[in-house]
Length: 246
Image (cartoon, rainbow, N blue to C red; front, top):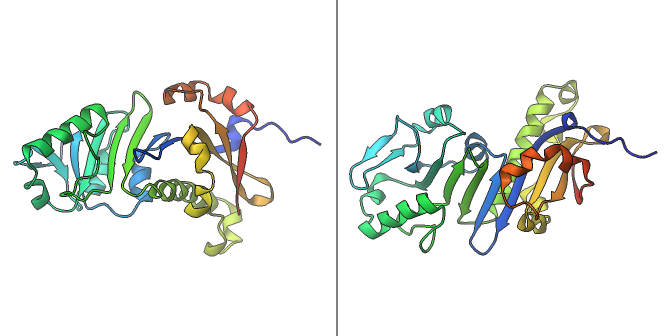
């Protein structure tokens, strides 16, 4: 007997991923700032290069606003996922005060073009990320100092969604915490070839109360916003790979 064709309601989450290994960035669509900050190691401070946030602290040297560690929760609550946002993380304000005019100019270029003049990673700021998003374009471009952190991010996002789903079902009460289905970054890395081409990763419930991720190659799409317009048609096509989550 052939499997029943899944409908939109059978999927829990979709995320588009397109990785550039050479330049160490990943373009995501379907990722929110709240998901990112919840899925990576704690970030200390955020220098706002392009934003609509009105409660930031002001650094006189760079003439730029920033968000301190203590204010990050407030920043998340006020974050507008439809507005343009670009930021770079840093350890302390003393580092900002050491930036030369040239280094500050490169940060402004980075926020405008979403690409660096040289490297997106500042030796003075010791940043791990550069985060640029556009609600209008439905995309988020993130530079990773360690590209493997992109798989950590994606795996944690999927695992958090599964955990939330399990916590609201009777299935959760029959399992211990250690038995909740999860995927590891190392296992997900085996499917990096799809991310390098540009692919849609769709989380769905599988048989026997487990989960799986359906992967569809979308290398023929050049603009992420078009994917969501065509999502129903895309999901009718056969997946290129299925990633099991036990």
